[in-house]
Image 1 (cartoon, chains in turn brown, yellow):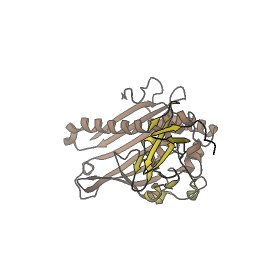
Image 2 (tube, chains in turn orange, purple):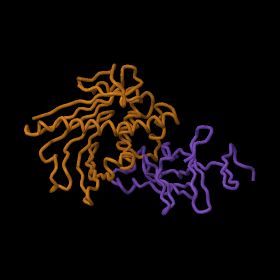
Image 3 (cartoon, one colour):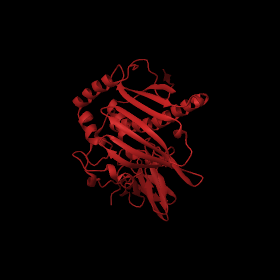
Image 4 (spheres, one colour):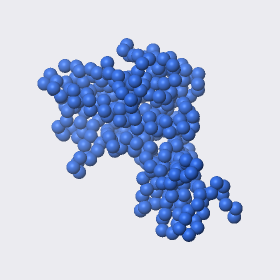
Length: 220
Length: 111
């Protein structure tokens, strides 16, 4: 059976800053070390990357493999999730997970809507666990986004809202840098990227009245 | 960590008889270095955001650990020059030590 849920909230930042924070892979193993202290890239093909996130549990290194895909300017997919090592019993052996994250501007164009669509393909017998599973996925997503927002707000205080100069510098590494520069390298490009992001938003997209992250959540 | 009357924060490190005072802004992307991890053995400060390491002796950039973590992705391109990491350095705050007190100066003291 397919269990589908969405998580929609507003982030008080520009689309460019939200996308930059997502593509800034260098922070995953540090700012988000609580969740995945080790982040390794196993393979890359175009805009698709196979990653392994691991942590230590009772002196055993365990984790998960996942494929991530970037669809410019502001859509991010995660799929083919499996446990690691493969012999280790894992929920991923009976459950297929696919997530699709859309960023698009709110009705004022000044803030960003984060719209996560999750699809879990699970055996019916797992139905009683779905509520807890969904709640833990939502909590994790919000915690990580709050950590990112903390950094985004700090940069805003120091360098001004929407300032992408640090990310655009040619010494600064980020995933899919060429795509990012193409879509967010200039104010004109950023405006076009916002239009494209809106056009790519899911049918259930909403742009006004969305609750801000950290205040409450809006679920559909 | 010390909060100055101006509202700014400073990082004060005592290493033996030496006292180092650094500004709290990471020169990479601006994280709060008062939350950095200090290692007395390697004499480094590690930024919590991207893990960049700085010498706690003089504030110079030591290492970006991500270069080892994701070499597969760090291919040079038109807008990413892997070999052009700036010579980051932590901002050093002017100060004087008098007895058991540390004074922050608005401007560098005249030599």
